[in-house]
Image 1 (cartoon, rainbow, N blue to C red):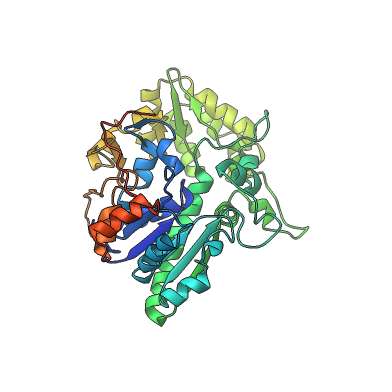
Image 2 (cartoon, rainbow, N blue to C red):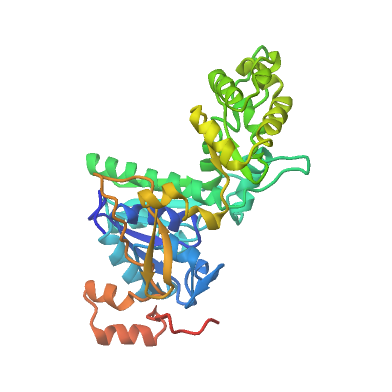
Amino acid sequence: MTGPLSGVKIVELAQMIAVPGATHLLANQGAEIIKVENTTGGDDLRMYGSRKGNMSGWFANANAGKRSIGLNLEREEAKDILSTFIKNADVFIEGFRPGAVSRLGFSADEAFKINPRLVYVSSSGFGAEGPYSERPVYDPVIQAISGWAGAQRTADGPSLIRGMVADKVAALTTSQAITAALFARNETGECQHVQVSMLEANIAFNWPDVMMHETVLDEDALHLPNLLGSYQLFSTSDGWVSVTAGTDSQWKAVCSALSRDDLANDERFSTAANRSKHFTEWYASFDEMLSAFTTAEALQKCQAADVPAVRVLDPSEVAHDIHVKEVGSIAEIEHPIVGRMRVPRQGAIFNNSSEYNPRPAPSYCQDTTELLTEIGYSNDKIEKLKSSGTISCLLYTSDAADE
């Protein structure tokens, strides 16, 4: 796939979402990704959730644009293969607990001996140092400790966001860091070691808004209620909408549009500062106002008044929204294993190119032979490596029975 990162070669040694999600973003921008998997089944994400032919939708979405090879890195010959990939790469990224990849002989220092211009990326849950550095993590753990879950608190207590938001924030942080490191490497000619902590990535992501009360520390600072705590959706007579009156003029406009000038003139709601002090009553009035209308009526009136408003969609409805369909935000493609599937266009479009045609996510180790041939291995040598358990060349097809 062509793009601004065409020609950039990345070797990925990781699984699940935080690292594969980062490299997937870079693959969408043209980077070539070699996904190194183990020889005992590969990335666990392959079997999570809805799937067909031994590939889940999760994996298919997070690993499009990549090639897969299976290496048993307990064997020296497999390490030699990985060394060759690193020698030819621009980026090597690993996503394990600190020290795990170093014990295999591929620390940053060792990798820089192989390739002095390498960008080496280490991504872990808590970072390389500190009392939690050796702990295992999953997305809910980072949501809990970074402030996400506490920020979703309701009368029933803290709550998790039902999406892998912590993993995806780490993926976004990592992908941006890689492009910055590549820029620095190209400017200076020097190797770069990037360390990403999922925890720190999520704390930083949350800080400007979710953690605003933890920013201004002087005792004489004015702390008004955080409006994020009042975020809510509103019920209409036949559904749900999101309507946001973020300014005084928008509040007056929506009240006028919905024939509730009495609320516009209510002193409690007359200014943003007053609404912040009385946001419980404000939102109750907002809800009462909107519940008198159908969803279609409420949206028509709000949009005519230039007030941000949309219908709340279930995941199954998103692809059918008229705007999403009109601009081509989601496409249908044919995957050789999964079959017909939907894929989203990425948020950034370069030079007005709206085409989205990534290489399909690979079946387990489907590219082992091709990749080894490219670096000079003969068919006989490849067969010997396979027989010895050094590599895996398994290929799951759409005809394979689900296990």
